[in-house]
Amino acid sequence: MWLRFRVAVVGMPQHLIRKLEQFTRLSASNRQAVVNTATQKVRFLGAHQDIISEGDAPEHVNLILEGWAYRYKQLEDGRRQIISFFLPGDLCDPHVFVLREMDHAIGTITPVRLAEIHRDQMLRLTDEHPRITQALWWETLVTAAIQREWTVNLGQRTGLERIGHLLCELFIRLRGVGLTEGDSCLLPVTQVELGDATGLSNVHVNRVLQELRASGLIVLRGKRLSIPDLRALQAVAQFNVNYLHLDREGRHLDANESERVSA
Amino acid sequence: MWLRFRVAVVGMPQHLIRKLEQFTRLSASNRQAVVNTATQKVRFLGAHQDIISEGDAPEHVNLILEGWAYRYKQLEDGRRQIISFFLPGDLCDPHVFVLREMDHAIGTITPVRLAEIHRDQMLRLTDEHPRITQALWWETLVTAAIQREWTVNLGQRTGLERIGHLLCELFIRLRGVGLTEGDSCLLPVTQVELGDATGLSNVHVNRVLQELRASGLIVLRGKRLSIPDLRALQAVAQFNVNYLHLDREGRHLDANESERVSA
DNA sequence: CCCAAAAACTTACGTATGTGAACTTTGAAA
DNA sequence: TTTCAAAGTTCACATACGTAAGTTTTTGGG
Image (cartoon, rainbow over all chains, first blue to last red):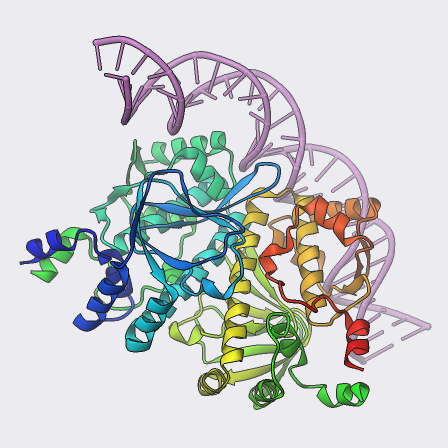
């Protein structure tokens, strides 16, 4: 039953639904409304393309259905800062319509499948589903909390801690949308990109990764990351999970566990 | 007339109103509603006190009426990052009720007068005044944009640029609420605090300030900051004002100009 | 006006991280 | 299977910034 459903939902916003259910339980009608909203207009982009550029007028909310993307800002002399990562299930600025133009760009890392959600659809969804409104509020506030934590990361932590902290965050966020398998996940990000996100040079990112590998805190081969002892990595990185506000029961199920629960 | 009014509004949320009017024009009834909401419960705090601590359950929205405060996060080993500054007219998290507990603390820098706005008052205000709802959305989005810009600041800019950028931002935000006089404003922040906000040691903050002074980009004596040539400082700090989203007409009036306009 | 405490400032020295320029490995397309 | 560009890795050296421990100046309460 679940397996049949799972085949059927390929192309659907299951990651968003799963993410929101970390915060609150959604009804069947809630879930259906999300599905309807997120399947109206679907777009595909290749890797390393801008979804929206600095200066553009925001026209709709983008929901990442599949693939990774990031917010970034480029300084005039070429320096670039990655401001945040978008994972499957992430929404790019649910209320961005209020602003005239984008002050930053959003680009893809991998090929991306995304849903464009127009203003009216968004309003209709929240008007008709208070539970979803609440859940979207939660997602907005957690996004802000993540941005604050990045401020702390860049301002106070050493290179080793910064990278460790970022890896913890990404792993836990991926786990929240069912994209981990046991202690491992995909990490389709180059060392240069890790550096642009953590304010470190690619050389130093490499040094730090070697050190994390040597101490057994991570296993990183190609695009696959394993974290054999997440607690240990969290301790090294001074990672306190509270800012992700995962305080509901029944969280932290990975793909297999969730299958069992659903069965 | 204006002067009499000005005496009358001491204790009122004039800075918030002024800030929101950077985004949209408010009606007399809008303004009255803000005043009513923000004068129900007023609190006074001394300097260097927590308004709310990490782990506390958020109970109301705090509106800074007078004085400076900041968000901060303290790591276990004592390192502290200032995550943002609150100036008069700033709201601390208009929708924070959704979360169970604070993941960071908010503390005062100077003595602060603030209004506590309870959930129901907030809902009533936005229910009855769509214009204010929009304006509060704008303020929320600008707050998020500021946090992103801090990420860029900490990740990519040098010490000199970071401090320069922060000073530009604070000056322009103060100007937006009428708290500048010509090219100068109060800056009631110690060098240690500037360091905690920019991820620099107090020693290096001092070096950088000397350099900014020597080059004539700033005049800083005690708690008074002057920026004789804002454009020049912006250029040095790679400061692009677009992230503050001040794109309505009639902005950038300082106290004197505004008096003339109101007369 | 005095005095203690806080803030500002200074110095000498140490180091985490950056720069530039290789060389090596990987992986996808042909 | 070959090829080529991108990614990863390494090295030698440079430097922006941190640390520790002062001294001096400013501030504000009594």
